[in-house]
Length: 168
Image 1 (cartoon, helix red, strand yellow):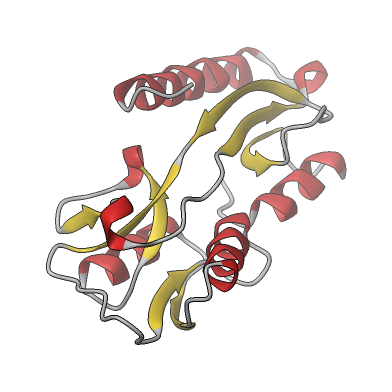
Image 2 (spheres, rainbow, N blue to C red):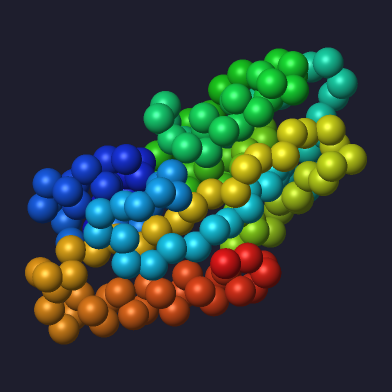
């Protein structure tokens, strides 16, 4: 199991290093795409996090090259809001914990929002981000029974999470 940026996972799949990947993609036709979902990212912060007018917004992000990070920083630039990277982690758990601890704002999809976080709304004057395309990719010709069982479990989990927040 690997936890990496989507672009690295898709490259590993193309290079025959892995057989299955869950990754963000641009939404166009992708090699090995088995199933896809659309999710709406939302701004989140600690329950008591306050955005101060005119102050730099501290961001909690994944490493450079992450789709979420790129969308957050681009949207803030276009909205003419100043920001800085306060914390970076390659794993979702690190991002979630940093947000809960009040280190800054991030963007997550509703299924990944946890207790200790609040979702920011339009009233908070943060820019709306475009939806994300999440894909389940597989080298199906190489999968055995165990691989297909893993895919079935992933599809069930991803569809349950997507239907819980009303997106697909």
